[in-house]
Image (tube, rainbow, N blue to C red):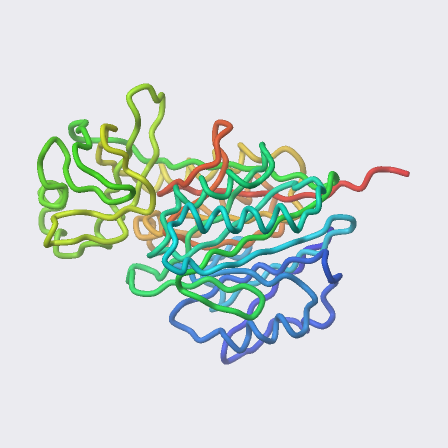
Length: 379
């Protein structure tokens, strides 16, 4: 397994000659993450034309490459496996529910595997239109039991206007794209941690539908939330990234963090990146720079079993807004655990997907790490 890292910018072009990068048809994946304010479409087409790989990626709230954040408008990791195969799938939502779209992608990947062992799946989806929780549920229904799924929701910085997913020359706003790595020699490692702490009263979700929250303790959710934001209420929805919700069921020992994607003044509702089930509890959260860095370290430690031949970091846009110019500190914290020589790529997202405590699910406000390694057995 060999991973090559590259960047592209409109003024400097590619950082290396793509034609010299090791790649094999059917056994190579190219992860590509783009600044949504820069037109990277031509560069993505060049990547696909010059490298025989499954090209997959999305728009971001910041690109990660090695220890740096935003080193270029387009960052790429090209990974060629020695023995494993790579298969991909992509589909627009087309009016279907996120769970149904996930089911379509899951079926396509399973069919393309032809019975081979699926070592792991990575998925990327439109960040403003796809319910990440439902997407994961649909995927898992049609993948072999125990298949680990990770990835994230595309982003658009703090603007929340337009996100997109790219797959093999096609780009769409309302899409889901995924790839699976097939082979017994490949292992996936995962870690996901937040670093956020609860404050204020614990309230009950008294009215919700899917990922739309209408009432907390019988009160309009948006009006109640604005009371906590104070002067920052005018900055919604981006201000909500600084104060996410954690939600948990009655018998759960730990909660799931949820980030606001949009608000509706007319219905006084809030739309989140994942489900906020009625009857569950909810509580506001806050954090500090030190706590976020600790969370990133813990995420890397959770998946650090073997030397990573590729590490994919997906962190939440809310973490970046809190850390500001110090965002690279959490990326460096990850590499301090994985090793500075570990090839790492990633992006800031509107939602992170990863297994945790044996369950694949959508997370928000976390640093999520996926490591991929291939160990060739001795003859």
